[in-house]
Structure formats: structure tokens, C-alpha cells
Image 1: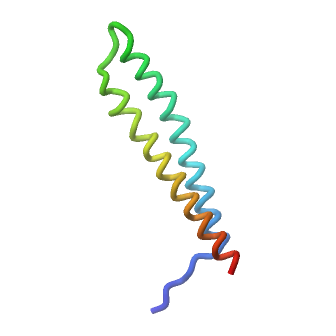
Image 2 (image 1 turned 90 degrees about the vertical axis):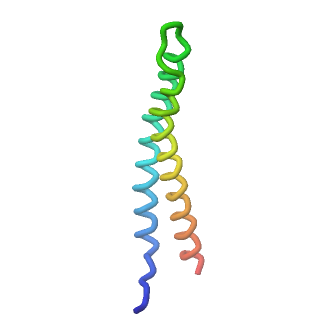
Image 3 (image 1 turned 135 degrees about the vertical axis):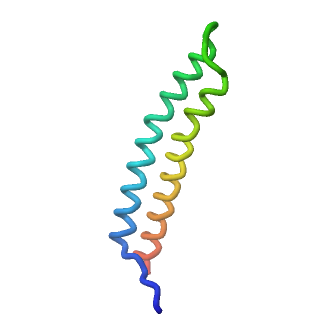
Length: 82
């Protein structure tokens, strides 16, 4: 059974989707984390672990999605060169 190689257009479309999702998560994660850090620094603020617990997951998922998007684009570029 032969494995099918993804086409260049498919790889680019997947990269576009992953990059969009990654940027959306980063746009949500960074301001949320900054707000939670500022709130934790106030005198009657929240727990200092709250920015890590709530803000870190969207930032990490956004970073990972952007990483995989760039890997897909690199693979498409290699396929295009051949």
C-alpha cells in the first residue's frame, strides 16, 4: 500500500489554517496574560499563579500551531523545488 504524498496546495492550505489559528490564540493569550499579571501585582490582586494557569495554554498552543504552519510551508517549498 503506497502512501500518498500531500500536494503543495494542500500543505499551503493547512499552513494557512494553522497560522490563522495560532495567531488567534496568541492574540487572545498575550493580553489575557498581561491583564492577569497586572491584576496579580495589585495589592488586592489575584493569585500569582493565575497568569501561568490561564494565560500560558493559549500562548503555548498558538506557538505550536505557528510552528507546525512554518514546518508545512517548509515542506511545501521543498516539494516545489523538486
